[in-house]
Image (cartoon, rainbow, N blue to C red; front, side, top):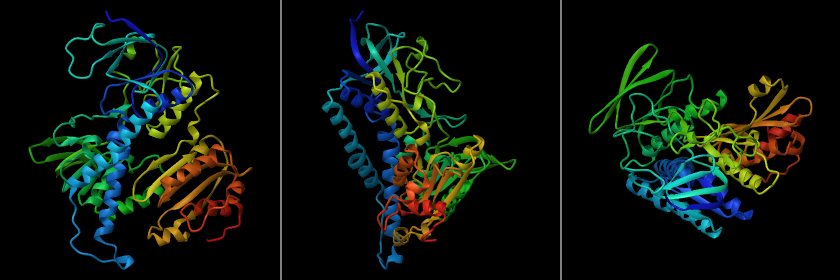
Length: 475
């Protein structure tokens, strides 16, 4: 039997939550050991096969469309061509690889011990690290045995697989969708959440014909309909077909294509495509590393139950990121990582999930922070809204991107801002300001008195506050 190694703070998983927890714990004086099984690698799904590479493809699609037609600016050209292989090479090597190197450098800078391997929990106090690769036997003599003072679980999530759509061949998950070797002429996307919508828009911009099959009555559930309607209109302009209230039933594939059968309005229909990407949600990785050998409690969604600091019911074991309740977002994992590392160090840290921004990099972008009107009403809070259109913003007009609006949701009595929404150019970058407004408990007068430079895309935030006070300027 291998000697038992005693560690200070051990982190399982090198994704957004894991590597940020490692850095913060080291900064707070802890000796940190990070265990990562190497798939998808340091940086996790977000950096390797998720939010970062998807934004690269979205950016490439926008550039390609601008190259095809910038006549509105008086710019004309001919023979614009797309080399998709070079696009993928740029995404993989100039964007993703660069950011991965940055993560590795930061972990080295903070003297984090990195162990390559798969962590398998034996009980509430001990785990084994199994070397990556095929395993015929798993016992205490295979790998390293480790105990800890504190253990942070950050094992992330994986795509949900639905019946008759096994991820193989031409039926792919979002990872496969980001790593296609050739640009599909026809692409079917099952699931109109933020991942499916983003990649549908990206591939439409790059020249594919895309069909979205969504089970509910609208894509992008969770965002208000007047926001989603603008995205739908733009997708349809790109030639994207959106089929709602539809249920994917079956897939049949050959060497060159896949045929997707779905049911809508009581009848079955089928569509033939080069690829079918399934993006119907993600499930927490709580079932494959021995968590059932511990006393850590899970909820009915197989997520780890934690308190406001990320502490589980087992002393010394913490959990963060996609395996705990809340949206599966990298920036949520970042925040929870810092909270847990701080709590271990004795800091008075706590998670506040109200201010977590929800962002979709659609065309145009969507952002939402805090409560919606409906959520406020459900809690018995009497609210009003103030909304300013990007059509009245000089910067948006100069960018030929004047669709959408910024909306503030505030209490009627004290005019405290408890929610904010945006659809339009650059609202993903405005989400940080909106989160700050809500986290700081600002009222609309505080926002109105905050000077925003002109002309910029964040002026509509101030303009909406002016409207709430009854003194609109540019509307």
